[in-house]
Image (cartoon, rainbow, N blue to C red):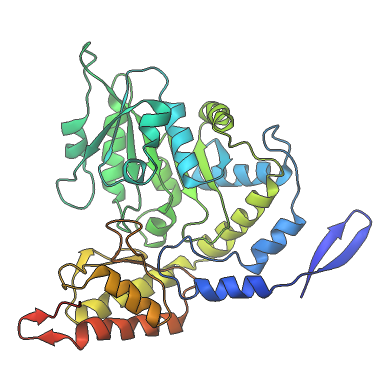
Length: 385
């Protein structure tokens, strides 16, 4: 295979061995562990070859500068900053928002900044984390926030300085109306409480028709978007906010080692991912398939831990009395990959992405029949040993 490359002295063709890429794409087609297990497509790889190679620490890379401006405009904010990962974006943004201790962050107790980012807010920001259990079992409401936010500035208190929400969370959508209510209340306080969103999968909420990107973005002082989750880019997340805030984020990104040399190799494929997968409307088909998978599981007598609202299906393996390791082993035997115990509590999670093949879904349906359809008895589902 050859890929076109523009040189200063003219046009040439660069031969590439794509065998490794074909293997990676084939593996992604049968991998239900997450939506970041995708393989960069050929358009993304070509964008890397053709990109500018400037230094983003000195803000000299045209591809990155253009992409940051593009994302800020897409979201209706002033500025944006490319980060290497979703965790880096979250931690840089939170550290930039917390300017004068003591301070506390209020968040859903299930949120990634609490459970899956190595204690970053405590380690990097020294913040008190207030993890709140949603009273409705689905998402935080204004009443949950008002009940747990610390507004006093007594010498004994640690005031809430940031409300950090996450959308989507476990594949479920936080409704726009609830986000707007929390935002209005937070901004009405004296001083206002900073509104932050871990929007790594906000694409999915928008694709589900629950609100536009700009409608959600308007509720937050800053938020992050991830280009690997669902969109298929090889790397990168974006922090969105005001020019003043993004300038502060640049300092903290540098402090944690996130300065990017030759930044176009990250920015170029990420932009392709946004344009082709998100703006190209490919997430809707993924979500429809996720709902089909959930319906098949339930039609065989299985139950779900969480509703399937976007691209995640949460099989309740405990309720079906199915050993989680056995389930993962059987999945491997039929040629598909699911989560094992490395991520505790996620073993029943299946995640759809746009590179999952129809054959992989057929194999998954066969697995469902094997563990549910053929093991029903008068007392329910027999336990797999």
